[in-house]
Image 1 (cartoon, rainbow, N blue to C red):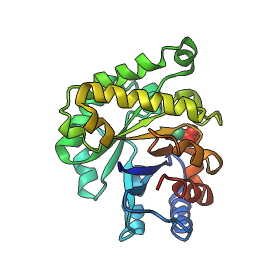
Image 2 (image 1 turned 30 degrees about the horizontal axis):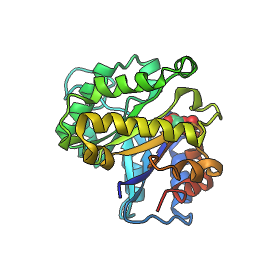
Image 3 (image 1 turned 120 degrees about the horizontal axis):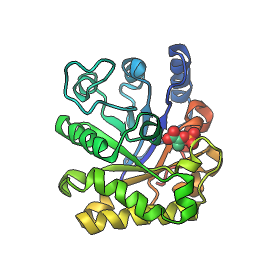
Length: 254
Ligand code: PEP
């Protein structure tokens, strides 16, 4: 069975004291993770080392950066390289979150470079895709998402994408309290898997974990995660509350 993942995206929230308290509370929560399940914490850069120390030795708990540079090193003030992340033991990087696409003009081509550099340095991307409301209303979400995958991932080999992680996040559902229905999520996840299967073969497509993101909460996680092609979630707001996120983690498919 492919990996089931509950990934937290803390975004630009919390002081270090709040972040440490949240992790302490989470670690004290009754969380049960089986062999193929993982809880991943996408924390702000300055907290990565602290939070890594807090989850050290905790099986199936892992860490993600929320972004990385497309450059290896050098005069790029304010950027954080994959080599830096690797050197402090960060395994995952969220790539192409819609907020980065929208507010920082990240294009599909730039994201292809970021995925490349992650692979080069052995980091695992959590590659985000998803359509805005007007695209959903026009009914063109399938081709829109397909194009995002095509322009950022299709240059890769199938083998390099074995066990890859994609997060489908309809922009209209992010932070809005408006969740996609479990049918809408399943429909798009199945589409994404078909697109990947057509390009890379069914075996590779079946190994890819496709997470849903957009107003996931403890109250709706089980139903959404229960869909055939939904392999967990990328969670913003609800990941900032220990009781919510621990319940979300416990809603992963067994
Ligand atoms: C996100 O930031 O990726 C996200 C899905 O946010 P929220 O869960 O708050 O909608």
